[in-house]
Length: 281
Ligand code: PAF
Image (cartoon, rainbow, N blue to C red; front, side, top):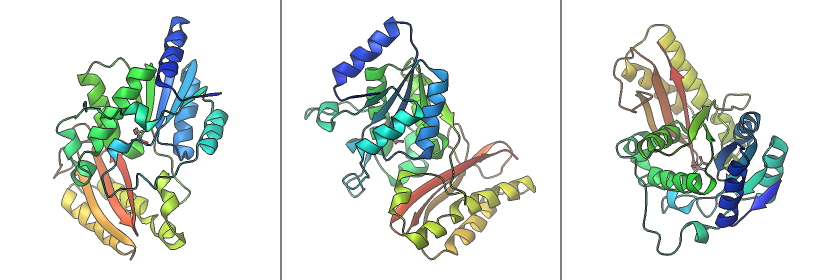
């Protein structure tokens, strides 16, 4: 397995792979790899001739008060885990090469970026869409793999690819969870022992919502109220939002008649965690 740092070498590698008729599977990451990422790499390995994993902590998707500086970085560990999971290339570009001092072009997927997390993280999805479009242009993958945990991100990327005619297939793979149901996330590392135990309440609340819907409850507000009660029973939890929305366009749903996305963002202590499930009535 090779680590490629230069944008030009990465683009050359991909061009040569395509000339040889090889398919490229691509897993974009910000490093701090966990089982969720590794499941995407393994899936890419099964379905492609060549697997590229990018490790790039993208400055433009972090707000000024967010954890860009402190985001966990460990290239050696990420490279080793990528190799073991079947990657051929780790693409590890420099932030200064990705964003020259005079970088002026950004991609905004209008509408979709303003819901859910977008409301609380202005500019976040613009940063995500921009870096993913740049990575797609450099790597030119046949298929790219994203996790359902970042549901809104996956929806934004799918729309961007559709609208800009980017020739890549997007595959969204299921959320990988810890034994107690907590969705795997690089930010789980920030939780202390008590917070880590409390964090399991997020998936409990999502499961409760699913049970209520399966018992015929259709009123979103009453479901959200019960979820709020359960999550608030943990002292360390501060709810940012709990929403029940259409899983395609993220518009709000008052009465549940069709498949919905139930998404939440909750601070456990100082750590902001997100999770979601898709439920059919
Ligand atoms: O999900 C992530 O880790 C990031 O948002 C992504 C897709 C790698 C873009 O920086």
